[in-house]
Amino acid sequence: MSRADAIARAQEYFDSGTFKSDLARRVAIATESQNPERVGELARYVESEMKPALEALGFRCRVMRHAKARGPFLYAERSEGEELPTVLGYGHGDVIRGLEAGWHAGLSPWQLVERDGCYWGRGVVDNKGQHTINLAALAAVLAVRGRLGFNAKWLIEMGEETGSAGLREICAENRDLFAADVLIASDGPRMAGDRATLSLGCRGAYPIDLTITAREGGHHSGNWGGLLSNPAIQLAHALASIAGPTGQVRIPDWVPKEIPDSVRRVLAECEIVSGPGDPQIDPAWGEPGLTAAEKVYVWFTFEVLAAPAIRRTRSTRCRRARGRAARCAPWSASIPMKSCRRCAVTSTARDFPWWKSPRRATRCSARRVQIPIIRGCVGLPRRSRAA
Ligand SMILES: [Zn+2]
Image (cartoon, protein in one colour):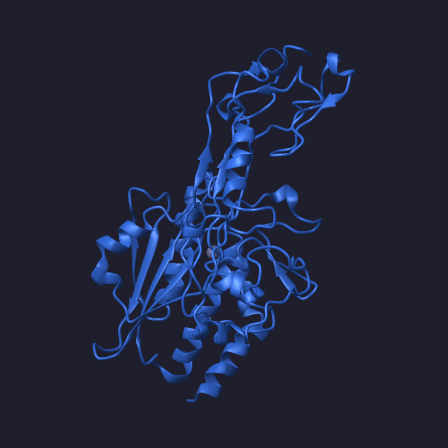
């Protein structure tokens, strides 16, 4: 009947393999919210997984819909007494696209595999693993004590990876339903893999799409170069006016005036380190004079998430440029405007039906300030008039 018993039970949940099998079942449901063909899977995750799991713990569940949201919302409530505090838990069951072809040999986004001491599968760390753990913790306490000692509510959404459409509205329209004394949302990374992290707040985020559509159609750079504005160059300058060459934000009104001493003292204990498999931190990147923790937790960050402004072409030949193949990497600085003026042609992204906007691409860490998506408008045409 003790805290130690509940912790032992939680450890047993992991050691017995039950956590792994629960998580594997959830990972196997391909809840890609960015993929319209998976809308049935979004509902299945709620109906066949989360609803039964919460009901088994004594929650009353309600599946909610909002016109703006492709997938459902699951609301669950478990009351132990009006005088007790209420804790609202949050999780999301949707994941970003599986991108099957990009996984290492033997790995699949929809099959949980244990390798090198890690579980691999889409959603393991975002966010199926987290809410599976949180529910297991509630189950362990209930199994040992028979009660939680607080009222619990849960909200699971199925559209976080597409910008949480309808979430704001559904919360506003059901204010009393979601009312709570504290919100506990487990979504986002730990400071280090071996250190549990409890964040008592998080920064806001604001997504921006920057788009320049200069004109319709594709126009030959040899005939029109120097006469028509080039959206890729204009977008590059727009970005460069927002952030400097080392990532420092250049707009004074966007950054805090100072970091309070009390916050600096707390952050002095937080060491941001790169763990195995993590990238090395670039010490010279971002706001000068701040520690890594200050940069990531209290300062403003401007990030570019995607910039599919330029089409990668199949070696489009240009005779007048001595046969040199003209290629553009997406948003490459080496747009072949100079070296191959005859086949670089400005155009709008709309001309290229093969191009799909990765709108609201990976946005998951609650601690990061956002991440605009740049949709650009320069491309090489399928058929160059010069070729
Ligand atoms: Zn997430």
